[in-house]
Amino acid sequence: MTKKVFDSIAAGLHDALLMAQGSKRAGKLVSVSVFPADVKKARKKVGLSREEFAQTFGLSAATLRKWENGERQPTGAARALLTIIAREPEAVLRAIRK
Image 1 (cartoon, rainbow, N blue to C red):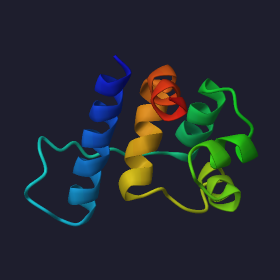
Image 2 (image 1 turned 90 degrees about the vertical axis):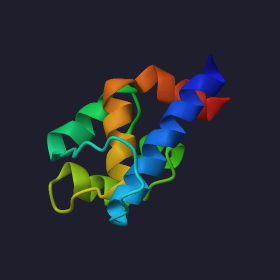
Image 3 (image 1 turned 180 degrees about the vertical axis):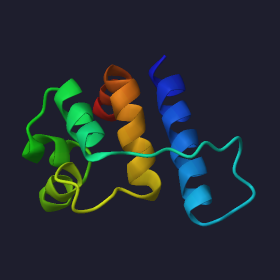
Image 4 (image 1 turned 30 degrees about the horizontal axis):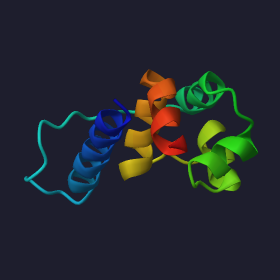
């Protein structure tokens, strides 16, 4: 089960990277908008502080703060990862903690 979840997340991130690079090789692509409240909501869903969330997902705490405050927008793979975290937080945590 964990490998399936990881493979699904990896495929989504791969498509996000291809989309960000403008590649037509990506599978069915969906444009996703991530708003500041969504970033904070995703973090709250996994029950982590900013520092813990940043550390867990390999982000800069300052960048996370800027996303949550609306000063910057996540792009590419970060945007895709945040969307997946918001929709399937338990699956993401299982996949990265194994």
